[in-house]
Structures are given as structure tokens and as C-alpha cells.
Length: 149
Image 1 (cartoon, rainbow, N blue to C red):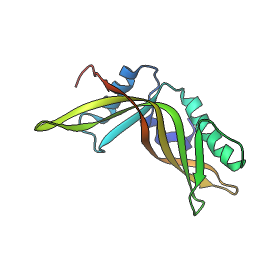
Image 2: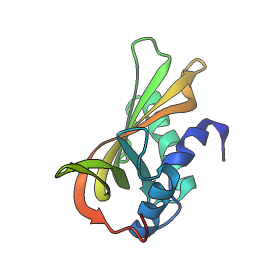
Image 3: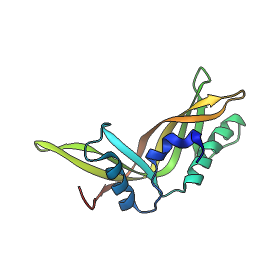
Image 4: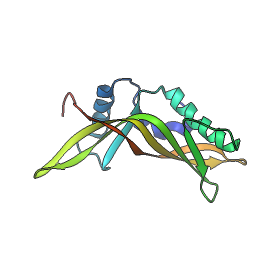
């Protein structure tokens, strides 16, 4: 794994199974994640995912080369990439209010859009280290049953 993608490892699950991805998120973050939600992309090969990220950045650099997988833009300073990928499958876990208490739930999403931020290095700017990951939107498939909570 290239060190520029190390940050993404905690947001990735190498499986095609939504149940395995949901269980992995639960085990990684526990029933009380510090963040409001915890997200993991699944149903994509690691190499294909990282290649897609790099391809989207290259498409921006080639001005006019399109990428069906998403878009990349540079911030005003030219020091940070904002990369938006579409068509992703992911699970999102978190605590939700229910009645007088809170419950932990993992939801499955398809046709999702995720955003990454990464440093821009060199001139012309190339992809540096990925520093941020978040899910933006997706089609809610529904909750995923966990084997143990």
C-alpha cells in the first residue's frame, strides 16, 4: 500500500459482503464511536479504489480528460486536492436517538458519493497524502443486522 493512501485504510473493508463490512465497522469503532458516524467503503478492490483516486487527479491535471468515477479540484492556494468519487458502496455506523436512549445502527448505501482531501505536491500539482474522508450522499438501502452488539 502506498503511504499516500494509509489514511484510507480505516475507511475501507476488503469484502463484497455488506454484513462483513458492517461488522468490521462495528469492531473498528465499537458501539460508541467518538465521531458521530463511522464509514467504510466496500465492494471495490483496494488497488482499483486507489487507482481511481489517482486517475481522477490525473484527469484534472490533463485539463479536459474526463473521469466517469468523479472529479478533482485544487483549493485556491493550490496546496490541497478535493476529490469527489461517485458510484461507491459504503456502510455508515453511528448512534441514533430512539425513545429515551440511544441505539447503534449500521446502514448500507449504494450509488454513494464520497469526498477525500489530499495534499497537492509538486509543480504541476500531483496527488500527495490523503488526509480526510467523508461520505456526502448515497441511496439508503437500509439497516444491516450485526451478528453481535
